[in-house]
Length: 212
Image (cartoon, rainbow, N blue to C red; front, side):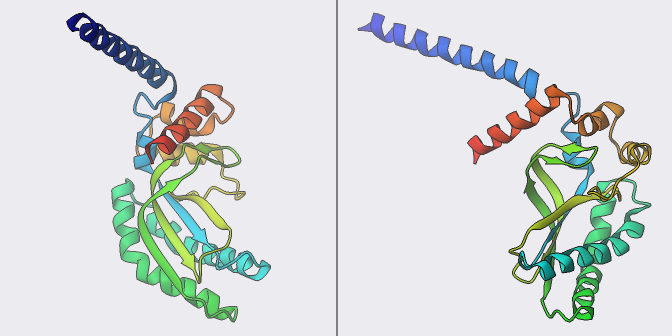
C-alpha cells in the first residue's frame, strides 16, 4: 500500500515539475519580458460607442470623437506620464460630456452621453503602423445613447489618436518615449509583422480566456 501511494505521489510530483517546466518555457517565449508590460501602464485608450449601427448614428459617433479630441489633445499635450494625464482627464469629464452632448444637439440629436474613465479589457488591436496587445488598459469610454453601435478605438495618451488618422512614426516614437517607453518597448507595438510578437499577443489572449 505504501509503495503504491509513494508511486502516485512521485508521479504527481513529476507531472507538476513537467508542467512547471512547460509553462516556464512558454512564458519565456510568449509572455512580456524586459518591461514589455509597461505598455499597459503607459497609455490611455479612447473608446467611443455609437448609439446604434445606423448611418446617422455612426456619423454622429465620429463627430463626437472629433469634439472630444479637440478638448483632450491640448489638455494632455504637456502631461509627463499617464498618472498626470489620468488626473487631467478625470477633471475634464464634465466638460467633455457637455461638449459631446452639444455636438449632438447641434445635429438635432437628443441622445445623452455618459463618459467613464477606468480599466477596460481590449482585444489585440491593429492600426496602420501599430499593434497593441490585448489586456486591460485605462480607457476613456464615451457612450452615446444606448451605446449599442459599432465602436471607435484609438490611443488617447500620448495624444496621438491612432486610427486611419495616419500618425507620423517619428513623431509617435518621440511621444511614446517621452512618456516612459523604451525603444525596445516601442518596437513591440510597431513591428507588427514580427512573428514573435504576434505569437505573444495570441498567447496572452488565450491565457486571458482561460482565466476568465
